[in-house]
Amino acid sequence: MALRTPEGAALLDELRSYDPSQELATATRLRRTHPAALVSAALGQARLRQRAVAKFGAEDAYRMFFTPNGVEQATRTSVATHRARRFAEAGGVQSVADLCCGIGGDAIAFARAGIRVLAVDRDPLTAEVARANATALGLADLIEVRCADVTEVDTSAYDAVFVDPARRGGRGRIFDPEAYSPPLSWATGAALRAPRAALKIAPGIPHEAIPERAEAEWISDGGDVKEAVLWFGEGFTAGSYRATVLPAGAALWSAAPLPAPPVGPVGRYLYEPDGAVIRAHLVADVVARCDGRLIDGTIAYVTSDRPYVSPYASGYEITDQLPFHMKKLKALLREREVGVLTVKKRGSAVEPEELRRRMKLRGPNAATVFLTRVAGAPTMLIGHPLAGPPAEERSPTGC
Image (cartoon, rainbow, N blue to C red; front, side):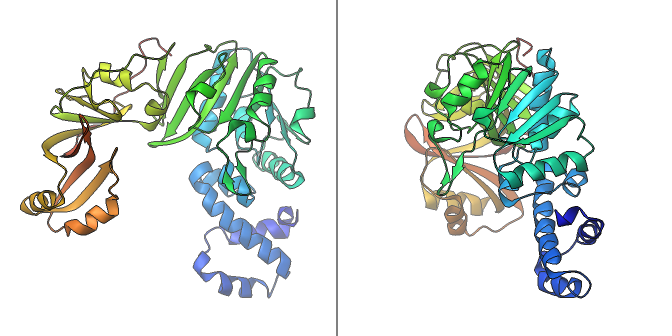
């Protein structure tokens, strides 16, 4: 890999803060003193490193190497670190077989948790990039990279198995778990043969597709649901559901599906559960914690008559409840001199940008409008976010 030579490394250092909008001028200048192929490769890698900062942080991203698919599909460091910590806390995990390792994001997190890693990928370039990253971050002694078909790798010598099947094809995302590469059924079989295992899957997986012997966890980071993980073996509870909210590290947990929460009128406060809580079907837990209810049996908005501050839900104080009507909303916002409007919706076909355009906002004040249904009727709820940082809440079970 030419970029790993002293000349390539110096060129990448020079391009660390380059402006992509000036790429032509930068390339012309660099080609006066470097081979054209090396300059082209360095510019491509510099672009990928800039994109990778959001997932890996600047300190790691500017030392690592990437492919376009690798940046797109890699696990962000915060999530990989959380997963490695769960393996470490399960006890007895000193080695893990990381199957479908990609560019090595999870392998790096495992190694940094003190776990020895066999990282396997069938694509030669991807495997070479993973090997380069282990070396660049000083983890080569803990990470063995192997280019092979994961279905042919013997993992019996390892304390745990981690599988991250490919969920993208030539036409984009793959939603059928049996169309993953390798299929979910194969990955589940590999997991059940190991003392402990974790399978990374798409967060939209239907609950009925989750194997009975798995603990299912949905993970969000910064308010966005990033992935779901199926855990197997010692230290994990088959049939349970978990929602983990990062960076707080807070987790809701239930040993079995929760009963449907009550439904009732809109109170003074409205709560928008974190996406991981919704995906894990644990909204009823949030309802119980805030002494609340749903505003509609089909909508994941929780309402209560008391303030509730938590990492599991964003809270708002509601000032107005109106039947859906564009002109009435426009008049109210004009009366209150609202110039900044946050639009949230569940159960409404209205597009937020279109609504903002039609409101012709003007004024120094801000507001939030929820386009939703209350007891089946199209409704507008207007309010503002509750102040205060999220409290560190955890499940009463301690999980």
